[in-house]
Image 1: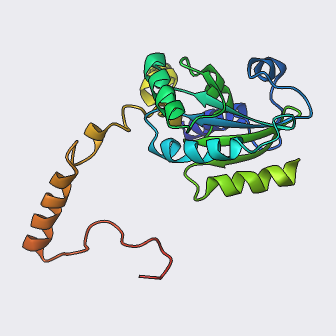
Image 2: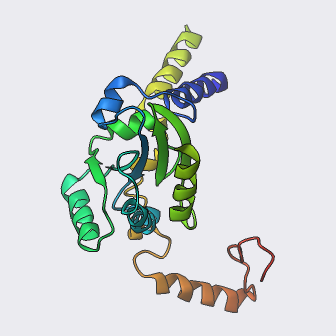
Length: 152
Length: 72
């Protein structure tokens, strides 16, 4: 029994996107990704308190990025789209949401990535997952800028 | 026969949703204020803790103080 449970957990983990994995074509096109551009995919939700702290900082750095080489994409995983949109509108009115957001109410996108916590950032270039940052991180804006500089 | 039935029952339980873990993106309900021990009123928790440590003389006996930096 233990072996069966362990196998299931292993299989579940293998289905997730980890560092070094390549995301499939359909997911890349669904997210509107082009080659040779670095993408920072930020999974968030209105109920996630760490996401609320992180989003203004991510938005702040987004304003100064060269959009030809780097793009931040938000994935709102709220199951209730109206709730998610209300949250996004509030952030936009405060200037705390300055990047493109894709709503994922059926959790199809996040189910494929399978992050181990919320919020999670995926750095993706040429469909390859370069790095993953999970959970609340102090001064995330500085961390992202440093990572982008290293990856560009 | 008994072993077959037991295996079948175990398989059903294994494949059923009752043992599936809650994914991080499915924790909306768990993140609600009402799911906290103190409910929606954070003062209630403080009040209960105050009574507890006053009665038990156990101030600081609940939770973990500090962030492990050794600075306090």
